[in-house]
Image 1 (cartoon, rainbow, N blue to C red):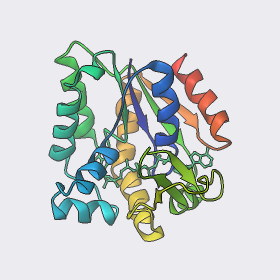
Image 2: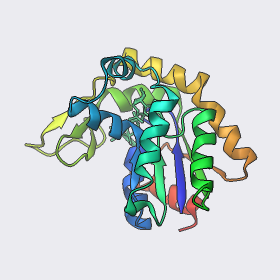
Image 3: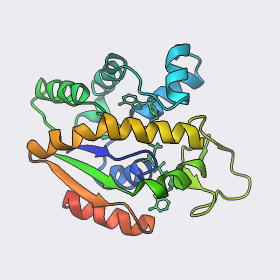
Length: 206
Ligand code: AP5
């Protein structure tokens, strides 16, 4: 199954992706994670680091290239969960073409919906375990004592507001793209993590 997870920053895409990937036995392909790993390895050009840290989008050709390389890996043969990609209509078209060349398609696109006022708190108080990638929240799901957590450089209130704006101006156009393709499901992302997981799995029919 090839699945897209959409939603504004802090909607819970990464949190829910972990459960879904485990359940379906498919890899999580997060362009945000791939870009951060590249930055941590000192391989991301300074202009792209700047774009990410200030809440802007990385150019389409960069992320399309990253996903194009990643879906060639053997663990993607049975499908993948695309987390935070596509974020523009040209990215959605490119993903469709890359999958079609392999006789595949997006089976379902899940839009996780959360009101903007909750997203600032979710992102600014997020912490991520450096080693495992486990996502925590200082209020709702605090890291255990001794966990080695980081605060993302783009999780400042100012940067999150820019990311929310980019979502509203550009990325939200991908929702009608998948709606017209007949594969869009909307999921209410407000509530306990476990409740949202149940809604996501129900939308996926698993
Ligand atoms: P990316 O890493 O994709 O960030 P994002 O889309 O802004 O999403 P987040 O990771 O912030 O949120 P999430 O929805 O995964 O939420 P999470 O589960 O962590 O992208 C970062 C940047 O990279 C972009 O701004 C851009 O610059 C660049 N980029 C990436 N992909 C790109 C692309 N395709 N094109 C161009 N540029 C690209 O949850 C958030 C917090 O809430 C956590 O603390 C969590 O514990 C908590 N939480 C989760 N669920 C709940 C719940 N139900 N109740 C309470 N708290 C919850």
